[in-house]
Length: 166
Image 1 (cartoon, helix red, strand yellow):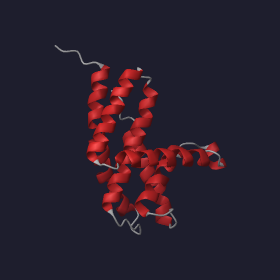
Image 2: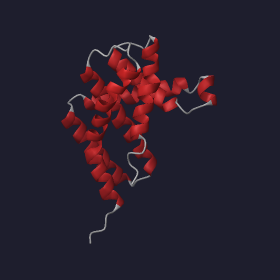
Image 3: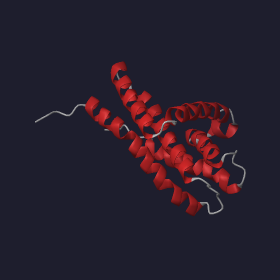
Image 4: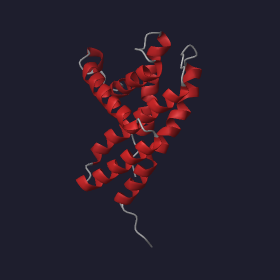
C-alpha cells in the first residue's frame, strides 16, 4: 500500500487549481446577476478571467500560510504558473495586476475606521474591488456595482480560502 504524503497531495492540488478557480468563476455569474439584476456585465469572458485570476490569487496567498519548505513551495508555484500560462496567455500579467491592486486596496481600506473595528470583509472587499474594476471597466458607482464588490469578493474568498486544506 502506497503512503500518501502531504507534498504529493499539494502537488495534485496545484495541478487542479486553475480548473477549480475556473469552475468557481463560471458558477458565480448567474447567481450574481440574479441577486443584482441591474448589474450590466457586458463581457462574460472578462468575468471568467477576472474571477478565475482572483481565485488563483487567493489560493496563492493562502499557500504562504502553510509554512512549506522552500523547494516544495517553489515546485507548487511553478506548476501553477505553467498551468496559468497554458490556460490564458495573459494570466500571469493579470495575476500581477490583481496582486498589486489587492495590496493597494487592502492597505487603503485597513486605514478606515470601519475596517479597523471589523476586519471581516477587508480581504474580500479588496479582491472584490479588483474584480469589479475589471469586469465593469470602471470604478463601481451604482448601488448594484457597489454591492458586487462585497458579494463577489466574499464568494471568491470563501470558495478559495481553504483550497490547500488536506
